[in-house]
Image (cartoon, rainbow, N blue to C red; front, side):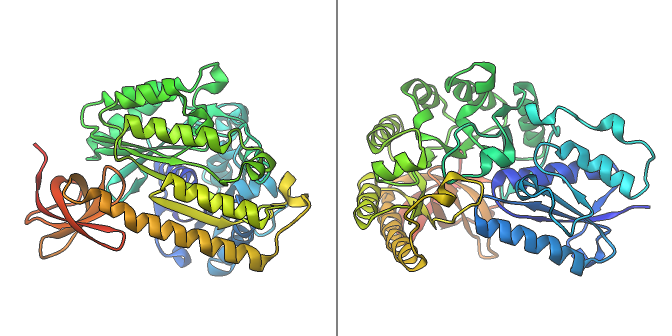
Length: 434
């Protein structure tokens, strides 16, 4: 019997990658994926625990699965379940460290085989669990996971508890996956992980290990563009930036996780840098990559945040000149130090500060488009209209709209920026790369 499986994923790119990985493993066992949850024999929820709201949604989705597909085997996996082993509603519950048990447990539950213990990976919590080549794409970009876990223990973050310590993927497996995805037609690769700059740290390597890995990825025939996920400012050393500068395939877009522009708040967050170091890293990157885009995450209303600290944070954001800021109100997360910190900020104040910082982000994002006027941009086509119009992202990760008869999704086109529409660049005279 061919069983149908439905997936619902909450949270980050890493979760999306791991959902794709589980989908691949189940496909190898004869399962087929359905987009209709009511048809599912198996309903998988990949949960998130990064905020209290994510926890709530994860719990809600587990119970919704039971109502939507009452006859299905409900599987809950991921960060929320790692932290809530007594979660009710799921037939099978695995976290992040015991994910390798999921498929054998499911097969046993469905009575497809009698003995599954031989395939259980009992030491998965201390090393990277290898799924083999996984296909997860964001439109025309393929996502490749290289690392799991984090050692930082920021006071607001549950991830080190839910995902464990840093574990790096075997370099050969990463390169093999990229090679396999090139054969499937992908030319741009997003390198992701929970704490990218810690790649191979558990093996005694420093930050340059990430740079050398990316050099190897760039050397694979067919790889045209490489993007990086979120980066920790304290890891962006001159040595790593020097290696990245030599990588012609690396897109000049860096997501540096700031969280706050106030040094006193950063200290309470247990971040491993201050604004002076962040400022230097941005300067070094902009020297190495002229016209690079800088994006970030920032939290408003962290416990004890004063009005003055909020103003410092806003002023620092404007000084840096980010292309975009992902702004979040602080969400108390049980199990973290920040949950019980003194000086919890009320909801109204957090909402006001969040709106102020988002307005700053919008102004900077619109102003950023002026930097491209008259310049040539390289666009990876994602959406194509019947009239030859298309949209896609340039190397600096700004959305571009243009027109080219015969344009197809996945194609790289070069053109000149002639204007903008809000956050969108408008271009003309697009032609294929030589």
